[in-house]
Image (cartoon, rainbow over all chains, first blue to last red; front, top):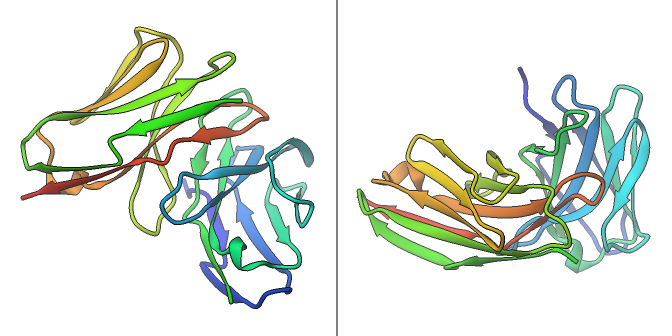
Length: 112
Length: 109
């Protein structure tokens, strides 16, 4: 089975711009979570979606938003980009009723 | 608020030299403790889930154990391909996972 897929792989944006990152979960997984990982740190939780509804939110500003589609894929949007938003953005999916999360390869975002 | 502290930050071993990585955690109620392996520039790869004190799980040269305050990842006779950053996390459910900063492990031939 295919794992979690994310697109694009790399992205370079300018301060103040907006970005959309995409994620497709493992087949059969209905929950998708987003994490931000800056260099030298562990991933930090941003959002969790289940059945198209937001189930949890981490400590991130309102510039960050997400949504989940009927096919369980998801998008993460970040508005008004700051230099500090430069990071590896990770998507993870999980099966209903299970807590193990399986991560995709990530999208490397660089803000200049 | 859940907290995870991993030690050491970095560890360099000779091939075949066994050692342990530590993960100390503080939670209001443990739902699960998770170990991941992360190679440079890639997403974390799931290794183990532990749910209760006394539980142990093994996979090849790795063995994870859990007490009420910490978890250990024991690596036996490591090989160079075991070099990676090992991440510990707690949580599960709608609040997501809380990760430590990881232990950067280097195995020298």
